[in-house]
Length: 156
Image (cartoon, rainbow, N blue to C red; front, top):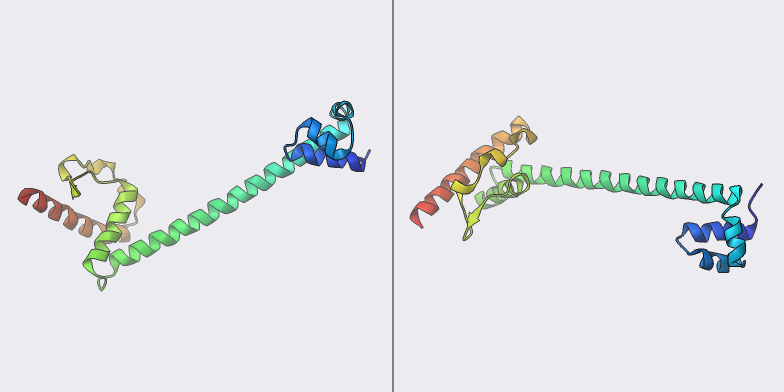
């Protein structure tokens, strides 16, 4: 049996989060009729179908957001790695690019803005997250920054 027009309105209103009373008013029926309809198999099936459709739409939207987010992260990482590996880029820009990577992988401990090498646990870094090519770019710059930090601490 197909739903009547006011039953469709009622189902849509309930599926949109309206209370039983408000959905009944929108459908032009009494609250008692609404409660009776909620016991009918056809109305229950319609509510269930709408719920499934809504969940599928939510899952689809979440998948699209995850894909866009992953694409954005990949693009951002690619740009940062390009900057870090560009020997023509200013040293400060290269260092900043490596610092950005470091902050995402394992934030450094700092004291008054200076890297505290002693309290930084190198085992926190998951170096396996990088390709060999990326490591060949990142490690020398990272080690150079650590050496500078040690020097600054020694003279501070």
